[in-house]
Amino acid sequence: RPLSCRGGEFDAVKLPAVTLIDALDTLAVLENASEFRRAVSLVDAVFGESRFDLDVNVSVFETNIRVLGGLLSAHALAADPELGLHDDYDGSLLALAVDLGRRLLPAFETATGIPYGTVNLRHGVPL
Image 1 (cartoon, rainbow, N blue to C red):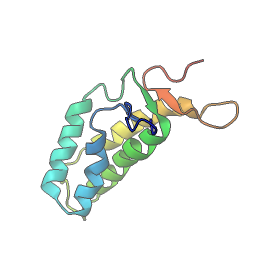
Image 2: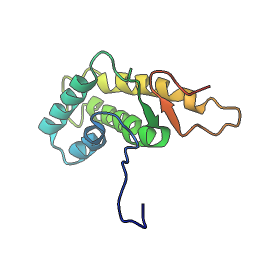
Image 3: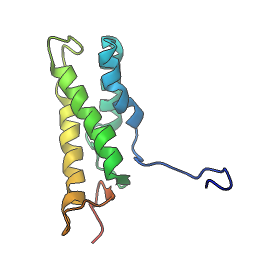
Image 4: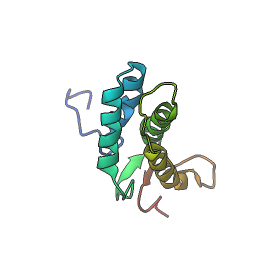
């Protein structure tokens, strides 16, 4: 609302721990292994076994770049033994990324080839 100088509610992603996931690669670049491990544990705790089985509409773009990209890059960093960030890493971030990627796929299955802007992570896209 630029004329009134009053903002509205803006939540493009609507998922828990988005900023934490987004920051995982920063912790790795800063070589802060203890906080990286702690953050990975927190992400695991937030999503647990249900993963991304959430009845929420999310922005495909924001979720793709911030959450899926964050999970994949953090997985690559955690799984690299030369970096020594997470010696007992079990691949949990990759499992989360695969689950999220599968839930985003319906947004790309369109007649025009142009993806939908939003997708519901539990139900896909409206018909």
